[in-house]
Image (spheres, rainbow, N blue to C red):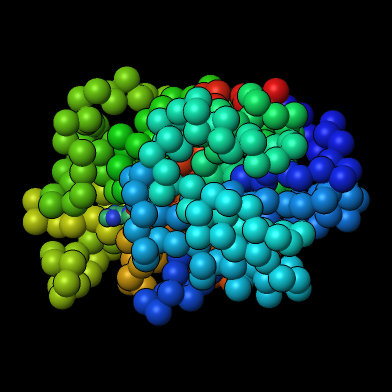
Length: 376
Ligand code: ADP
Ligand code: MG
C-alpha cells in the first residue's frame, strides 16, 4: 500500500476520500465529530508538509441510493469541519469544484455511478484533480468509484488514518505479541462467524458474549429460553468446538424486556423456557477478566449484552474495564462496541480504536479490501 511518503502532492490538486458519515441530531447538527476529527491530520499534512494547492474532499452520507436526497446533503459537516480546521471550507452542492484551499463536494452517493463503480464516473472524478488520497477506512470494504475506481486513474496513496488503521489491524492479525485474546460479542453470530473462524487459530483464548453466545449455547444443547438467537445457525456451528473458546457460565435474565420482570443472575444450566438472556453474568466477567489480564494483545468487537439498558451493561462495562486495565496492546472496533466503551470514559486507555465497523470485520476475517488493494 502506498502512503503519503510515496506521493508528491506539492502544487497539486488532491482528491481526498474521507469518511464523514457522522451521526446527526434531529436538527441536523453533527452529534459525534470523531470521524471529522480523524480526517484532519491528513488534510493538514497535505497542505502543510505536502504543499498541496488544493484539497478536494469526497465523502458519502447515509444511503441515498444514487439519488439526491435533500436531508442527506453534506452541509452540516462543512461548518463542523471549518471549526475543527480553523479555516474556511468551500462547499459545492454537486461535483463542481469550488474555490478554496479545502473544499467538500456533495454526497458522492447521490450519483448512481458511485456504488456500481462505473468507469465513466471514476473518469469524471479523476478529472477533478491531479492525484488521489484515500483516508476513508470505513468504506474500504466497498469497491466504489470514489474508493477503488478512481485510484486506478490517478497517482495515489493512503492517508494517515488509513495507514494507521491498516498498520494496527495488520499488527494484531499477523504479528501480535502472544498471548492473544479475542473478545467477540454482539447481536448475530451470522455476521461474526467468519471472524471467529479466522481468529481461532491465531489466538490463545476467544471469549464469546452477547446474543451471539446464545446461538453457541443452543448449539451445545443448552436452554436459552426466549433469548435472541439464530436457530438455523445452531446446527452449522456445531464444528465450532475448541479448547480456546470460552462461553458464558452465568447470565443476566428477565422474563420480559420492557418491565424487566424477575431480573436474575443465573448459571447457564439454570436458564428455563421463559427466560430472556440479556447480559453475561458476574462469574463470566471474572473468568474473562482473568484471561484478559494475561493477554499481550486484545482484539474486541461486539458488546457482551444489551448495554443500551443500564441493567444489562455490567458485562460489557466489566470487560471494558479489564481491557482498559490491561498492559497489553488493545484494539477495539464496531459501532456499538466503541459507543459502549465511550460510555465508560475509558476510551483513552485503549491502544487503538478502529473507525471502521464493517471494514474492520472484513480485514480481521482475512479478506482483501478493495479500497486498500487499489492503493498498491
Ligand atoms: P458492533 O456494532 O460493535 O459490531 P453488533 O452490531 O454486532 O456490535 O451488536 C451490537 C448489539 O447487540 C447491541 O445493540 C446490543 O444491545 C446487542 N446485544 C448484545 N447482547 C444482546 C443480548 N443478549 N440480547 C439482545 N441484544 C444483545
Ligand atoms: Mg453494530
